[in-house]
Image (cartoon, rainbow over all chains, first blue to last red; front, side, top):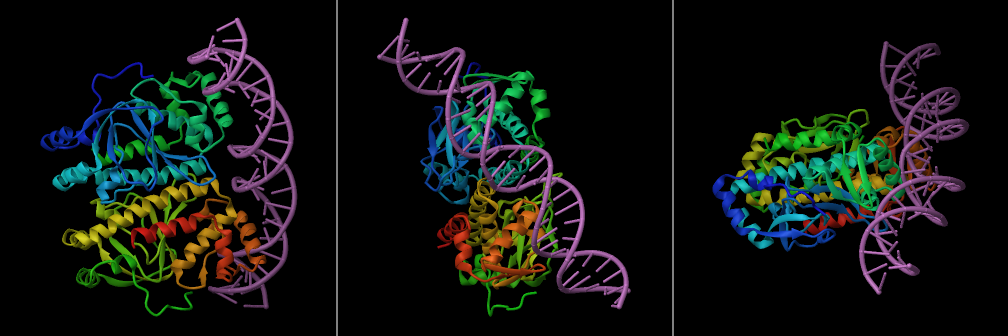
Length: 235
Length: 235
DNA sequence: TCCTCTCTGTGCTGTAACGTACAGACAATG
DNA sequence: CATTGTCTGTACGTTACAGCACAGAGAGGA
């Protein structure tokens, strides 16, 4: 349900590369449509493809017996799926699923490994991204532990907003509940507060961001900290 | 307060290397004593040295404003401190502190980076370890979220037991509370249960493991899962 | 048009863990 | 020996969230 497709969204990791390498990588990629709800990889399974999201985005989740999967991060055009191949390991640490319909570039895992051998700069970029991922995992962990539902909800909405490149996206309370590792009805309550405050509005899974400033004020500091950290590493 | 020093504890990451590279690395290392409570690095600060624990062990913690640091992992002779240098980044994602007095090998960060350039095998080993760290972070995150205090306490005791190479080590309730991200008195209650069940005994910070089997039964499955995962990657 | 499904709102009870506070026991120190 | 600090036990009110259950409302298909 992407209403507005921005003129030209590029994947930031690819954008980091010098022109020649960037073109080589782009040549190996094929554009694909990310379909909402598709599972792109299971934990501990090898990758078939790596994905560089453009307007679509992907969620990573930790799967544990007897519990709903717990969200560990979002991958939009600032990142990629399959980065552990840069460690020489063809396995996914987490389950990945399309969370926002849209577009992406993809490459076969084999081709990607090949490119990695040829491009030191690509490897360096991915190493940086890996470092970002580690700090994100840590912080998300602490955030889930210490912060309350409402700020955390605001944080996820902001992160989704950034990656959707639109003020309007699809996300039910049920989904959000899984992301945050809480009950659906807790989300209904927290989201209800935000809606009454005219910060967001939603209807049957269609969420609109009305007042981003307020949303940022409601969010815990984790949103800003993580963004800054990314920016610093890719400056 | 290490009472028994095992005859010959080697660092497993170094042990993974082929003889020649192993000797080269060992030659660059100096043995040091890890003193309980010493902070070895702060989050986002560069490393002076990297550490390969032997009988001592180190804890990594996530630092967040307004909260006690939250434990994210232990580093014993199965791992190392400073592995992010393998990503070409001289910065620590987390705070690291000596949690168990004992011995370690260390190398300057500069020297370590130099070794990394010379030894593809070292890099490969560290890449694997990085992957393990990522899965550990994820799982710890979910574990803290879903599992209750008692199983989590048991898990940390088991992990500490492994890394201390002794049935007896120093760890106050206060410390454990920080590790688990809970109140001190919650730990007193959970530990009291374990003591009454004769699984552990403790006195003024000196903990003894009496019945490891029972401790394993009390722990959540995370302990086994994480061990298996490590073993599989370093098989 | 009806039916079914999905999404959301809400209310109730239960409970794990918090926050705080205090007291006793022991160890170390002067 | 007295004093101080550290470690542990315990207790009580509070709170955030779980778990469950149900009802209403809109969407979409038959």
